[in-house]
Length: 212
Image 1: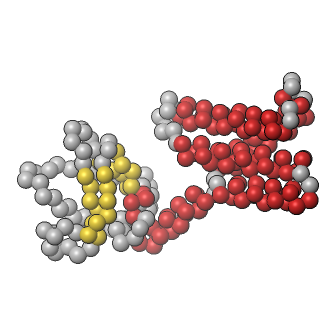
Image 2 (image 1 turned 90 degrees about the horizontal axis):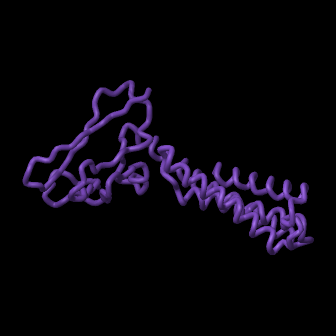
Image 3 (image 1 turned 30 degrees about the vertical axis):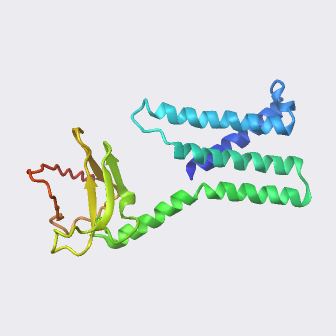
C-alpha cells in the first residue's frame, strides 16, 4: 500500500542520508545497532502521524502502523543485504525484502477484489449471500452486525439477513454503508425490509448522501 511504499522510501532515504553525511556517531554503529535504531526512528514517525490524525478529525489506525513497519523492515533488509551480505545470502535477503514489501499491498488488493464483487451485484447494495457483504459496513456506537438466516417468525423470508443488535443507552447507534456505487440514474427507489420482535414501535433514520 501507499503506507508501506512511503516508509520504505523514507527509511532508505534516512539510511543513505545518515551514512553519506556521517551524522554524529550513528553512521559508525555496527549493523546490529544501526538498523534497529533507524527502524525505531522510522516507526516512531509512523506512530506520530497516526496520533496526530486524532486531532485533525481522522481516526488513528494501528493497521496503518503495521503497513509502515513492513515498508521499514523491507528497506532495512534491502540495504543490509546489498551492503553487508554476499552470494546466496544477499539474494535471500533481497528476496525476503521484496516479499515483505509486496505483502503490504495484500490489503489493497483484497479490497479491490471485494469492490469488484460488490459492483457485480449492483443494483443490490448489500448482497448477504456473499461473505464480503459486511466489509463495507462501518459500525457506530457499539452496534453488532451478523449475517444470519431469517428468523423463524419471518416466515415469508428464506434468504440470509443482516442481524443488527443495538446497544442500550446509546443515543445514535447505527451503521454506514460505504462504496454504494454511482450509477443511480436509471433507478427511482430504494427498498429494504425490516423485521423486529420489539413490542414498541421503533424509530429509525435513513440518510442518503448523494455526491454525484
